[in-house]
Image (cartoon, rainbow, N blue to C red; front, side, top):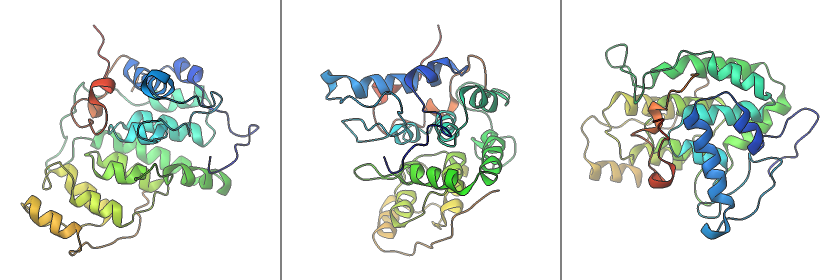
Length: 265
């Protein structure tokens, strides 16, 4: 772990505590299934410390829990992890996540022309970043360590930059994630439509400008030494049974078969 947990200030996040959260079924199942797979010797998993799973690393991808959630474009589970990492207890996390009206299943419609489809998460991101601003330096340093912790190759922000959720990208940047060359390249090489509202929003957050309708070859040339403009980090200042709209179609960067959303029958 990149820091030492002060047990008097920070409550560890355990498998049991996740199960106790009053969160949508798909969120609990998504997290606990990843943990079970990572721990299963049959899949090459390794034992980890059950008292704190923020930094467990799975054997296949060497991801911690935040890496795994971000790789599926899942904002709410990522937010649960970030809330727990700054010391919020189970009741506080549950209240924070569930205070927002659930969005429609499999993607909410943009409410305004040109607005990206994850805009319904922005209020939640705003509130968390405002909460973070009120934390002391020790708490903020701990969170910075988490959001900048790399697996064998990538940071959570680099993984998210390959995705399609601007609200998640803004959340990570607001938590102190570093925008480096690898992140800029990830935006250029994204497999999603470059001119979409989602990708335009991510480009603005990261500080990368891509010409509209540019070809994949042109984007690859940019990523290997073209005109990527750098920018400073942008710091801006669902309850029930709903499954995630952000894990339904935009989140198969790792194990789609194993980690597809859980649907209630």
